[in-house]
Image (cartoon, rainbow, N blue to C red; front, side):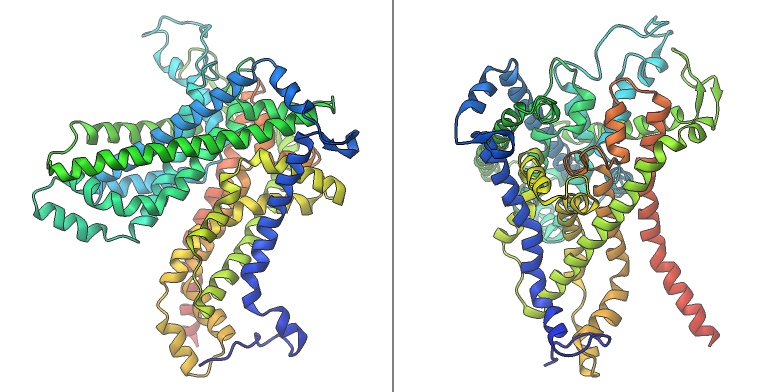
Length: 578
């Protein structure tokens, strides 16, 4: 058996023990979960009045009484719960019905090609694109006016943002459908989907009915954690809600952010209590979802036992319409804002600008240069650090033979399921005490919490799927484990590693609340600038910011796709020349 030795460049002795790869998983958990727990405590104590820095030196229920007296808080909490459950339910239903109807067809592959790039677009950018489409002076009314609507000026109607949260639901569906679709694709490789479909079709079941009766029961357990993450995010989202809800009708997350940012420091206690309520709302939403799961499971079992072989009427075309609408709205909104970034004059109801110009980019360069630089180095740092930790954890898993249990996966999803504002509020207090408030170290750590789970999800399956015989062959030839790791596994896994890095970078680009709390207003990114301008800023500047938000991850994904081919091609040419 090969002995775990240090890499060739590492000296013997104590340094060898420091780089022992078996320390990677517990170290990652400490970096990853320790501050989350501390942040939750830092939120819970001020919620009960204990915040010595602001004069709260004893426990009290005063923050909760102030929260209960605040006008509109019950409506905001209900709006958060309803919009979150509706968005998550529509997203799951749309994805599962589409896959059930079109799995194995050419439409399935086309959907994969179209939806994958949308996954890299930040939530705020997608929300701004949708706001442009649905606004009274938006692209949809421009295309319909005046010939269909009779409008020669923007009408006084509230479509996006709207007081009821329907545009918020639509934006969340557009953004979460690609995520759930790709998570479901990954889970399909872990179940016997093809074999189950062949058996079902041999028994006379239609494609959609056979998939729902044989594949979905195997599959759902694999995707329940991503679904809970989507549900928690939808209930507690802040940046999209800031863009797509009107000021008098906010969600609870928006209210909490207002309190936390208010110059009146006494509202910090109310914000902490509100963050606890936000946590409770997520738990209620997940509890209601689990109850719905059990109800659907019972009804589904009865449906399976009846043996009906007919597909649900109209479900396939309806699922196709939903997917096309979601993808079309997402792409159209981003395209419209890209046009705005090149616009010199665009009057309503013209469908396209009457004058184009590149001056917007030059004029706005000074405004976007600092957020662009921060977004770049922050995304690269957070994704790079997370990638190193994930690779070390996966390598330790293979060397020790201990795969993470379902409980460990729950820990991995914890920052995605717990509302961001619930523990970031307390984490900000800890960063102030530690002197990291507004410092790049605290900002990288805040982004790392959300980047690392996505990189793990992207890389874990390709890493585990690598044929172990390659490593065994190299070990039989005398290679150490570190040499096998560096010279065998890393070159073979270069493409999935780069794609995982691009995924982590895209997640970092889209983070809003971690930047607001950890950056303390001194470190801003493209996303924070976009949200800050969403209340009525210059559309040309917003278009420039959104284009940059979307272009950075897409460029990195393109590099991740092309780099392995170029590297191997260069190595082949060099070897051939020798």
